[in-house]
Length: 189
Image 1: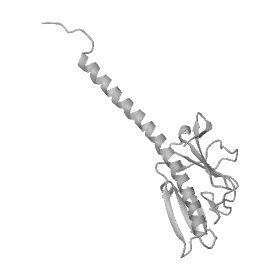
Image 2 (image 1 turned 90 degrees about the vertical axis):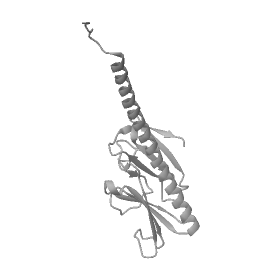
Image 3 (image 1 turned 135 degrees about the vertical axis):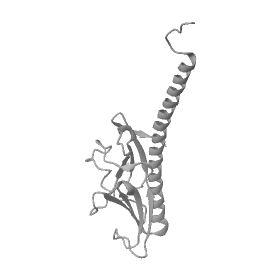
């Protein structure tokens, strides 16, 4: 009868290494996937603003973009072709919605424009709206009433998932920002 020495067999070690590798690849892909998703949400916001500006110019109508943060299920952007310029949906006006994908409007601890923490900041906001339904108005010539910054993040509110989209009022040009290690940095597209 042979005695067995204490220790692990090669097969046991290989199984453990394979399991560790699978778990590590799952964690890395999950982290990378969320970064891509957040970047895609910012680009969707940018495209929505550009489409609203183009619609305002082409149809010679006021367009209002409302950022609905009233509930987790309604995280979306509403685009209203506001023919009577009253901020309310009327019978002959067109409304469309663009939902955020895995993101939410979120007030960061620090803003890129130095404003008080809110999920939309800047002088281009339409006044008289509820705090959870901020909006911006695009005039028929394609301009906004002022600069605006829109902030989004994940449900888990991890700081490195925060993104910002700065919109210049006179031209509606956008700049994309991300939060890394608690500091905002401008990103290129």
